[in-house]
Image 1: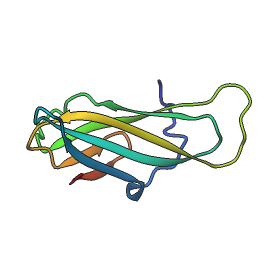
Image 2 (image 1 turned 60 degrees about the horizontal axis):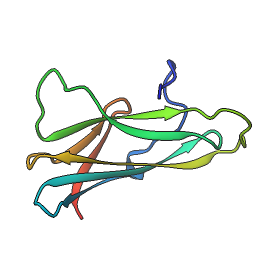
Image 3 (image 1 turned 45 degrees about the vertical axis):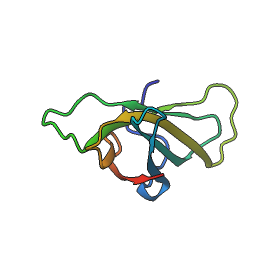
Length: 111
């Protein structure tokens, strides 16, 4: 999936995202990140991907990018709420999720 060169097409707000920690049966920690965006038409697909590690290590932050895939074919040109979600393994020190390409910080909360 690629993001347009001129920036995201959808509108993102920090308050529309949540990061919730969970424990697997074997005790490992994961975080589920969920959000919703206002996209300019129907048919957008959104995904969360691990971002490349930062130059300066920040073990308390999980770095992700949100990637848009624009629709193909005929779509409704009406603002459409579009969900995005992903689950990622994290260490004990992670307290925040950063959607790096959007500049959105999300605190990790207990689930």
